[in-house]
Length: 276
Image (cartoon, rainbow, N blue to C red):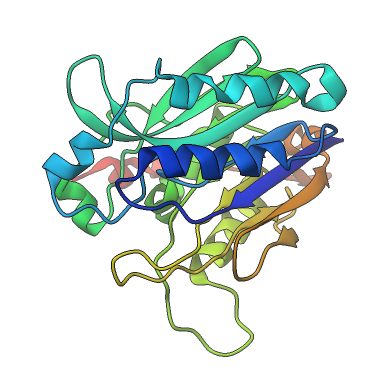
């Protein structure tokens, strides 16, 4: 079993020092026996930027201590054997372009960086979209894929991660509040549940909380198992949830002796999905 934690916190847009302290305190509270931790989207910077200039002022390279420092937490995870931290940050790329990114960090440092491909709404004025498929990284705790927030709205994207062997999809996210009937989960959580089930791939979504420049959030941090069931969810406010997941189950795509999620695909008929 892999023990996964998802953290919900409230960054302050533009206050990098305060956000580093908030993230640091949240990581310090993660138990040593956790293997994988997921932090929210843009956890280092906040989200509701006024313009591209403000986003750029909050962007740091993946080599910045704000990101590489997560290795300190990773080194004590898994009972001291070393775990993985996945978290969102505003990235100043080596090409001097600003991206909405997530880093995968272990005790040795940054294993990889994913740049959000599907930018939501005002993000398009502040960031450049990534141009690579979902990042999938081998770790001692399973094969971990990464997507960010609005990426989840595109079933082709989660399927790509699953086809690349992701057993756990880590999803840093900032889900703006959506009105819904009483008792219903946020629609984005329902999307995660469906994506997990149709791909037989666990999904850990780390949402944010707090009100930022008039924007409220779903506060929908959830850990979903490979069968599509929510194993843990935070509810409102800052907090953390932990769940034990059988990631090995994600390798078995059979639904019955004669039904297989991947084996029964018909890619020969899916050509129109690639059309503009």
